[in-house]
Amino acid sequence: MGLNVIDVVVGILLQGGNQENGLPVLHSGNGGGSFLLAQRPDGKSYAGYWEFPGGKVEQGETLLQALQRELCEELGIEIVTAYPWLARSYNYAHGKVRLNFFRVTSWQGWLHGKENQSLSWQTTYGLTVSPVLPANEFIFRALQLPSLYAISNAAELGSELFLERLQDALGNGLKLVQVREPGYSREAMRQLSMDVVKMAHRYGAQVLINSDSELAKEVQADGVHMTGSQLDACQSRPDFPLCAVSCHSIEDIRRASRLGLDFVVLSPVLPTRSHPGAAHLGWNRFAQMAESSAIPVYALGGLYSEDMKIAWQHGAHGIAMLRHAW
Ligand SMILES: Nc1nc2c([nH]c(=O)n2[C@H]2C[C@H](O)[C@@H](COP(=O)(O)OP(=O)(O)OP(=O)(O)O)O2)c(=O)[nH]1
Image (cartoon, rainbow, N blue to C red; front, side, top):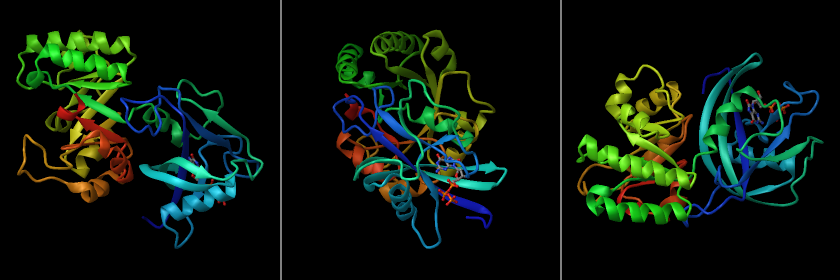
């Protein structure tokens, strides 16, 4: 960390939310879950602004130790479970800060404003308090993303069986789907994408189309999922509510976040059935690559829904699954 950058830890306390596909739920942004904001007290810079609890890291502290201390000082609680999430730098007039965000899902003790600050549980449906600290705006979008990103597998299952499985998954709370069928003709992709979008939208789920922006527009999908080579050629964020990309390096992740994309998928984390002997990242390397990401990173490659917690522990926003999603 450069000399003049102030390291800050930020705790996003999460509670509630609907089940997502029967998976452990960390927080489901669109499923009724809420998060805690606190109002900065008089005497601090940006007094009156709403922020997540947290503060500056003190010398000799790890990020997690700093978060424990701040949440104890500000809210009187002791963290039981916290997952590292995003990190982002921001230039304020008073200096450059590096914000290290954690998602805090369980704690002990009586939660109350120990510094006489107001507290408010908010949802991503729309904040009822304002203003919020300018560096935090992007976080509210990221909080809306679910833990599971399911990638279509119609070629292997057959379109009919795939759509049946999709319907079951949507009924169980699946909220984010990518249509990706490399072996399909354009016409077959168009037909499948139309069916997926129609079904997903009935359940309030969102659909991204792999690599084809024109098709995504044509079938009124919610976004496009770019390939790594499309990312290299991309000059500005495609015009969709959701834009994602497949990444294999830290440079890819940085580029995606400079373009203002919503999230990335980093792979392969573990060996997969389709590429059993191929090199894979493993969880430690995944964590090193994800740790400085300013946008959510989904882990992909050889994962099952049981791997969700280990993914969170290594800084993933959630997991992406192809074969095992259905
Ligand atoms: N706590 C917190 N700080 C944030 C958030 N977003 C954001 O840009 N910041 C910035 C504002 C400040 O420049 C810095 C945190 O500094 P602070 O003044 O709150 O730190 P502190 O609690 O250690 O306070 P102090 O002892 O220095 O008065 O990080 C956020 O969500 N929570």
